[in-house]
Image (tube, rainbow, N blue to C red; front, side, top):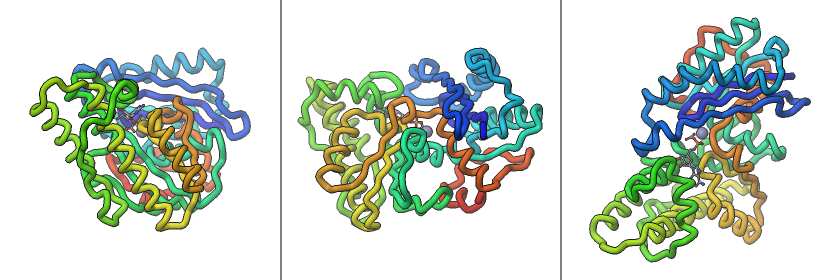
Amino acid sequence: MITFAVETSCDETALAIYGDERGVIGDIILSQAVIHSPFGGVVPELSAREHTRNIVPLLDRLLKETNFDLKDIDFVSFTLTPGLILSLVVGVAFAKAIAYQYNKPLVPVHHLEGHIYSVFLEKKVDYPFLALVISGGHTDLYLVKNFGEYEFLGGTLDDAVGESYDKVAKMLGLGYPGGPIIDKLAREGKRLYELPKPLLNDGSLNFSFSGLKTAVFNLLTKKKNIKKEDVAFSFQETVIEILLKKTLKAIERTGVKRLVVVGGVSANSRLREVFKEASEKEGFELYIPSLHLSTDNALMIAYAGIERFKRGVVAPLDINPQPNIPLEEFGKIFS
Ligand code: KG4
Ligand code: ZN
């Protein structure tokens, strides 16, 4: 079974061709980072404009590189939700056009489901497992009981963790996306500054990062001769400590000792180190995708699309993108 997959929910235009038996046939990603960098974050209208400009030439490149004929696909997978609505519109319209032209079914995928299943492209994980989804738009903990069966355990009440990386990087004048830049800079720093850890001991599995961002802002405005490296290190250690503590609480509460950590922030080198140490110490299985699968890509959408298609789910040609269907609801709607 072979699918063509489309992902345009944020600032990456991504297309892939993937088969459950053949594996990766083609995979192409165009990042808009340079377009958004001067603004320190994604500008939704610019993102949509870039997707529109680039998606057809990107398809041409993919087909040239792979020598693949789209008539040989079985169906089209696409990100329906969540994401920037104008950006989603471009990808959904494109997916529909391909499905219509080749007379193939359309299969909707939830972006977070894509991230969760990015791990499966490299190694299958037994059910049930916990998923810590950490990206530019999300910081969520889920219990995954089976494909499409998701229980929300907790999430951020304000900023997503990737968003706070990006905002702190902006305050430090470091550019966008902030995550990889802070990741690198923190290697030269020390933990000199104590930053707040909101909700750390509140008993819930929720997160809050907006206070942390404000604390960094106050630090930068009040103290002189601050080294950016030390701010980066202090911020990053605090974030990772919060993420780990809540995750360990989720493991303890559910008794599930299998964890996948996915989404752009899972590319973080220090986070990978800390979670690996914790998995050995606490005795849980840990799965984190390779770097190229951590950030947005269309292969993860293809993988989840195949799982959904195998369960007989197809979408009508007049389906429209939604900015934010919760994952647990999506799993029920498209089951
Ligand atoms: O999953 P993703 O590519 O897009 C969304 O679905 O949001 O995640 C993007 C986020 C950005 O906020 C970016 O700064 C962050 O992931 N990120 C990182 C690293 N690489 C990307 N954060 C921390 N460390 C990294 N190495
Ligand atoms: Zn993402």
